[in-house]
Image (tube, rainbow, N blue to C red; front, side):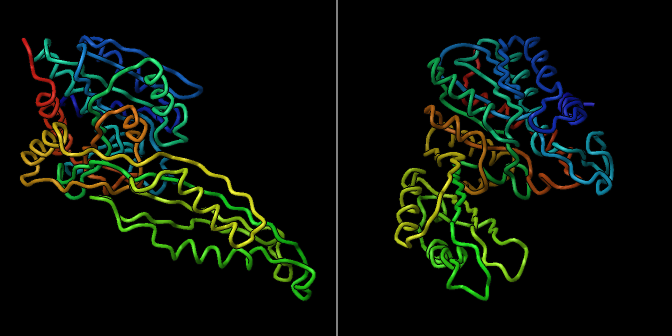
Length: 378
């Protein structure tokens, strides 16, 4: 059994449902210390974070990942136990197989191989792992990034091992991510009987024109490789459950995915001003998940493009699509960030999986990328 397969299986077997690390990082820390890395653990609340470094000085290359996974859902729907890794027809099954215990295992194996072959490499090779990526993302990389900012910890380049490939390993290079901003709007009316609307005020009716304006607005036309900013309403709740009662309040939840033409404060101000124009009696609570980031042309993108072209047989698509990742907390430190990982077709699904061929190739891919960025020394 190869090193990367053995480690991936060991990680999948640990029931690390967010934010419980379930011993994954302790296993990894022991391996990295044996390989000559300096390891620091940072536990905040229920969240484990691991910071491991080898070498010193600039440039600083960080391999970023998470050891937590989403819940498996109904166990009866799985072909095999989600926390008992099983190989069937050249495919490894288990929760986290793609998102992202295979990527974490490949990072570790690639780092071990690189420092063994090039102990005197230039700069610093680091791994940053958290158990809070799939959860609230409060005490994980977000918190660690604040510590790094206070310490003055430098990061030049960051590679996130999130599953980003679409059809084959290396066919997509993530060079940025949109920002994410969520709002919870509560509109107050006056509850009453539907037969006497003059004695009540229906908050659903009040908010409807404002929602129509929100969903109909074209926020922008996109930015470089970013798509246009979009707003989606995700939940609307009102009423008592009775058909003859005008509700007293209506609650609307929505999310914006936005490009670098915007930031959260400007979007919040624009939407509040629009709601004020509609003369609503409302409260509005915001949750800022992360600002957009973008890595322009440079050494990191050029190296990644070269490596992925070799592994995929064609130049990768360079994209800023998808959801969010923990790189949104590293980019504000001044780092250039990209994402490269296995095929994402099964992530968060029943029978999540990764092909053995891709798993075996991942450490080689990451090691090649590390070697191009941190020149091997004697």
